[in-house]
Length: 190
Image 1: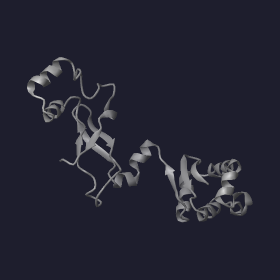
Image 2: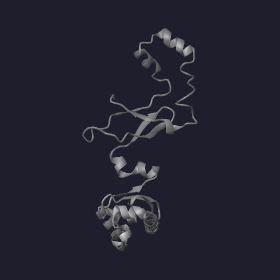
Image 3: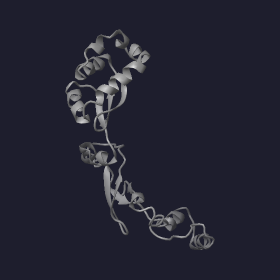
Image 4: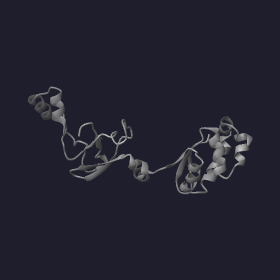
């Protein structure tokens, strides 16, 4: 305690005082060093016991400056912290860009489609992200999958005639869903 989100003048940030040394450093950055010596806030347990006093106090202080104005001195003091990004900021964050966490694939109807890639990576940097391919359209691989399961032409035709695959009316689920649902898939195959 504190290990939570706080609203600043222009957005939100998270601060994590997972060790006592971070709490002491934070009180200095906040310009409130007396809080470190206040017996109500001396230990994790004390701060937790008095969170109803401490959290509003910290919230008032954090609202007085912008996220960037808080992060710079907290980074310098090695206090665990980070901005809480909205979607646009998260997608343009330098870390996101450096790790290539946004995929760009081509869709025959919607053109270039952006979608998130998995942040889970295995292997050395640069070789840890499988190649991309666009998501299949509805029914695009039905026959290949069914043939792989041992279905023959007659059985596939019978299933199709019985309506087992539904009616394909357009890309994905139709225009109402738009490009937001044109997801890219990561595969081991090129």
